[in-house]
Amino acid sequence: MSASEAVSMQSSTEPVSSGHYSGSADGTVWFRSHFEQAAGEVIDFLGGDGISLEGKRVADVGCGDGITDLGLAVRAKPASLVGFDVVPTDTAALSEQAAGCDVQELPDNLSFVTCGETGLPAPDGSFDYVLSWSAFEHILDPVPVLRDIRRILTDEGVLFIQLWPFYDSAHGTHLVDWFPEGFAQFHYDDDEILRRMRAAGNQDAVTGMYEAYRTLNRITADGLHAALRKAGFRVVKLELQADGAHIPHEAADIPPSRIGISGIKLLAVKDGPGPDATSEPQPEAAAQPAPAAAGTTARVRHAALRISRGALRRLDDRLERLQVADRDQ
Ligand SMILES: C[S@@+](CC[C@H](N)C(=O)[O-])C[C@H]1O[C@@H](n2cnc3c(N)ncnc32)[C@H](O)[C@@H]1O
Image 1 (cartoon, protein in one colour):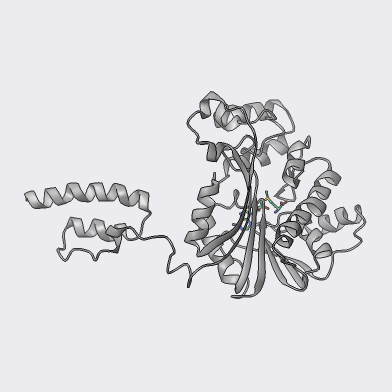
Image 2: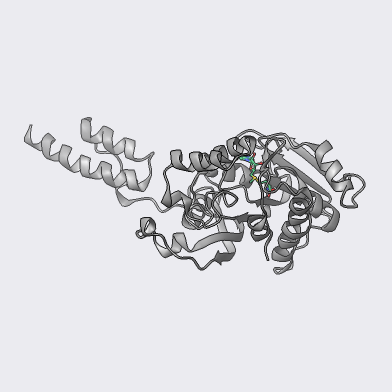
């Protein structure tokens, strides 16, 4: 059983702890599912490729309450492990929980730093490994964060990402305690989700978890891959978690690759010279120099250089219409 599954099985009604998302009113279950299971899964996944964190400089992005990092700091023995999060990590609370689980004090190799939404306060190339556990579905704008992770990694550095659950999967709302049958995101609109949560009681938990649900970035496995490529990473190892599910009729058009994939673990390495020289294939039209004529068509094509391929297609349609209009003038 993975840590994420353990969390999903808890009868949580107290999901927010010190401003971080926490999955259970039962602190011991929550602590163990991170200190032992999540940390163990990171160690095993890396170890499967002969990677040891011992003596290495490690960062964790989106470290939350820091319990997974504590498990890694104690068990994997990195030279240093820095947990970054936009919400300050409550080390007093972490120490208290740790003491209850036979870890008497926080180890010297563990520290926590509050970061910005897209900026990690760390020098270039200062980490051998960067980890992220259950955070990338909460990060508002993943590409700049991935670019900054790339910046703080050494050239030989490795990025480990675990994400569970993807938005389109059964428990993608993160609201398993209120909707254990799953797929609430397809059954109900947001007002109805909130109404049902409120009706179940525990208003503090409702506010925090409804906010967490509403701010999910809804990233998919393919979307995460595209974000990694855009940020200058290449995925070198991949493990998908696929769960059996009964599909509600409201989700009939969601492809199996989205609704059936609930989680991912991956390793990625730096690819190419850097995110500025994007590894995304450039559309042929965008690679062409802008037409010399300084008309509307030139301005539209120039704008297309800066935008995504989906938007580029729409602009190309517009461009075609404008070219016809230019010709007719
Ligand atoms: C679901 S929690 C996971 C915490 C921890 N990794 C764990 O498994 O318990 C997601 C965390 O990501 C953090 N987060 C959201 N956006 C972030 C960002 N741009 N940079 C760093 N952390 C971020 C949140 O504050 C939150 O603590």
